[in-house]
Image (cartoon, rainbow, N blue to C red; front, top):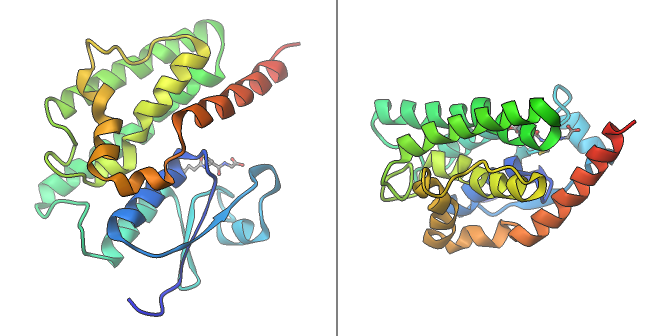
Length: 225
Ligand SMILES: N[C@@H](CCC(=O)N[C@@H](CS)C(=O)NCC(=O)O)C(=O)O
């Protein structure tokens, strides 16, 4: 739509920001991007998301929308071309169900494995693995959750595989077993290969790994007496 102003406030290493970049790229929406310094949040961020004070925030013609899955739904409803959700209401509900499953069950498990220590860490890693196995079962032999085409669930969640592998490398705990979860192992790459435009805004794995190693060092240092 001509004359529209779309702006995204985000952070380069944030997977929640990445899902919004991906949705905008797939829809071919032009947008400005404002990188946030999270320890020193901009007044715009605090003004637009006073409740959670988190990125990503999408600002469309001056109106802010927060929470990445809500933003994805907004994008889907506002720009209807290149649809991410299937037409059938039951299939739409399933896409939303699995995206919520990832945020409610897999994300806390993966990030918890990164931020906890000792027995708690092992317990959280097991929960993460169990939930990733459930996800593998749902993906089955398909390349994408959207089956032959990238859809809502792929845009929202394929990043967890890359992030889980980064956590694995840093804390040396296996979360994704290539034999048990062959489809999940290739899912993130399948998405990037099928839609090269998404690569443009996806941070390279090495850069993310270095960044998260630094972050992990800080966590460990602040946890030790
Ligand atoms: N549920 C939120 C999570 C967003 C989130 O956790 N953002 C983090 C960066 S990855 C953030 O802004 N953190 C800043 C802070 O907690 O101070 C979403 O889906 O948008």
